[in-house]
Image (cartoon, rainbow, N blue to C red; front, side, top):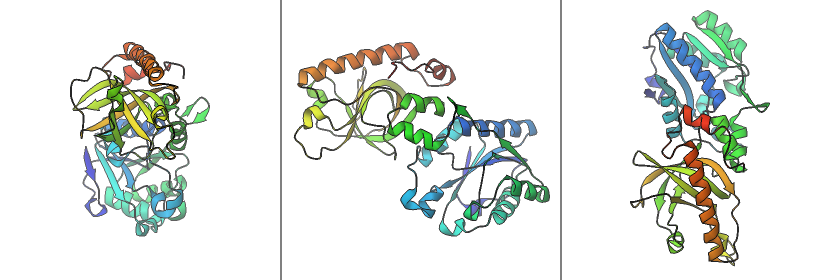
Length: 333
């Protein structure tokens, strides 16, 4: 997959470019439907499938105090786009100067002249350009002049609700990772680096990897069944997000941590870059009356997680077949 990150590097060099445009934060099932159409059409025409997106999110420039937290980093987004079979991804730097481009100029100069698009697919409510003044009707008019067609893709719904990046952010902040997984089509994934911790887990028989997240969104405090990716391998794991209230009672401002107990781990993860998939939520973080009570509950959590991975496959790649197995969350919480 070719990645282009500068406007000046855009030239009309591709055979029959088929394009879609958007922020695509999270690359949920609605986004995937649009991209699947782009890939299908490009292959049918012997052309090139392409996505045009922006970095940073336009809201970071136009209204930074109200900009949404991003579900994926740019690098995570590129990795997912690669998995979706695209040929080209154009990541244009979004600046204040760029935001002043009119919708007409954007369509003519970038879509028509720089890319030479032949078929363009967008959502029915797509808007673009300065003040979001451009809509599908303008694209269709410019397309007739510039020689490209415009197709619209219907929105995707789950449980009678439109799938959206805004909804997914809300699910994650509420701890509803099973629901997020269903509308993403894969588990929510967090990247980070393992750092040295206080080794409390080791002292109670459950050594954990303390992860400093690189993502902007951290799910609600609680205990989750997870998979951790290390050195190209996926391992089943159990993750606690929170302030460890059993051990921090009396502290006025305990710091939040992400601690992952990795099953059957035979190596040190310290300072390694890892990725953590959130499969489902087990329970809230609880302050236990004693260390022994906490250990007893962790053992129960581990048993539930083991049953979960027995069901979906210990080293599941979370591809289509694995996702189908996950459609009914286990456990119900």
